[in-house]
Image 1 (spheres, rainbow, N blue to C red):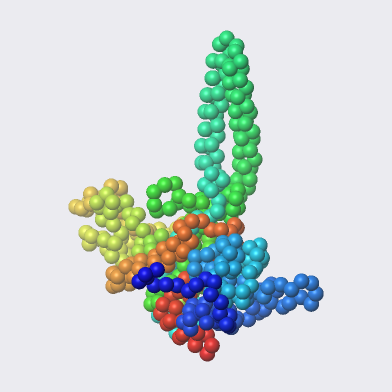
Image 2 (cartoon, rainbow, N blue to C red; image 1 turned 60 degrees about the vertical axis):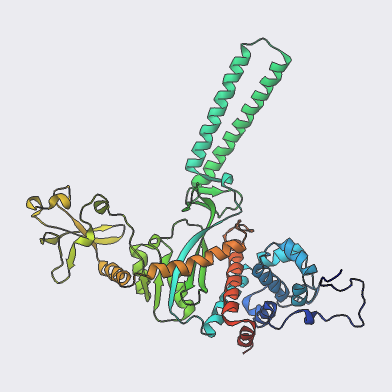
Length: 479
């Protein structure tokens, strides 16, 4: 081939067959996967088949299938059929699983039957990171992102969707009936008779569809959230920040270490809002890190007085901005921040210098609220800039001082939101990229949680490999 680099002759025989280990470099990540799985107590973690049966056909050891899955998710190969093909042709996998080639059903059944144990393996790697002193910052960023489920939007139903579908069917039936009336007034022909039969068939199908919708409505009304999904019963329709009508999927919550960007904790939820997720994620993260005090930064979608209070009581310092919902500020009037609270007197001082006294105590949504107002608003010279009503009232929660302290922290650290973005949004982009920007492969929340645990494990493994390198990580696992 002239001056080109030449390869080896395919038909050239060798005196000694090559050793598979010679094809795998000392710093190859598959050696890390092999060492990590071999160091696990698979029986203690609850893997099926870790203790072989005394009789019957021998099965694959769980370590073989676990290594296969970790390698697959690390290299964007998540399908059981693709993993089966790779095990038969990929030299790295031949080395990793000892040239075994499990069939795709065996591979898929392993992920389905060992969900809890696989999720614990993900947690064990986080503990390994903690032992290697990679999680010492005591600070995390919490965020959530929507991931598509295998359920199509057309197979998810809410009250509004059913109403729109019924309206479409009624319009179609009315149109077909009008066409039938027109056909009845025309001279009968073979073509017209055929058209009439087709219209009657369409009307019959639409009537059957209406009956099906009636049955779906009964199921939907029996559901706690008045919503059902036919393909994946746990998936839910969720609004997204982008254009369009949202997606049917899951809201995945993660807590990411601000120093090394390792995912410390994660959870798959089917609730579209983040407001009720802060306390649970924060306390779980604090327990995983084993710290006395944890700093958490999140976006305003997590703002909930009850959640912030529960987090603070659990030893978590929360920093997040309040939602911009002040109508007064929007209309150009004074907002609540313009009123200064005087704790010694339990009064507010307004922009005009008047004192608003605590005049009413009430309870709203389980929160004890105090209301403050002054009796001099009617004669105030700047009343038009304050309120269009009789007097300006200011509400204060009994734990409002905690919210004020949180705002002071945010004011003192204006980079907190930038740190949050660069910490927690990158992992979501990486996870979705590795998924191929498509949907989960499995159905129902427990199985989707297992699938996400494998994605998180692969992401964390990549992060640690980039930080430490394969050889240092191998030494840490061995030591």
